[in-house]
Image 1 (cartoon, one colour):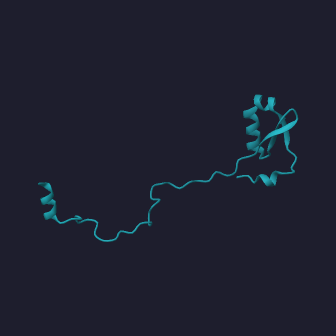
Image 2: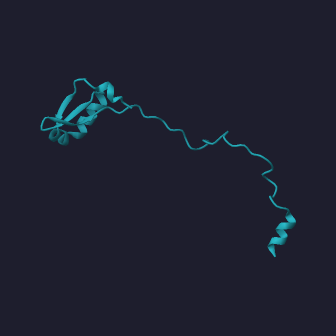
Image 3: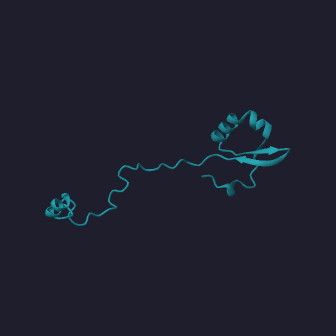
Length: 91
């Protein structure tokens, strides 16, 4: 992410809001390529700044994300209750 404090005081290209509306995609591409922000003005007063995006953070895959975070305690294969109790519950 771009630190906006580092941009303060730097001269920026200023673009009228009407021009920005007409050339939006081209201006965004210019910011992406040059890494230089532009200031959008309305009646000569700043209303917004377009700054280059920071590096994209890769998120890890969810597959295997819990590996090593759980511990099996006890027997997880045998039934929890006695087999005779299971027969009694069926009736």
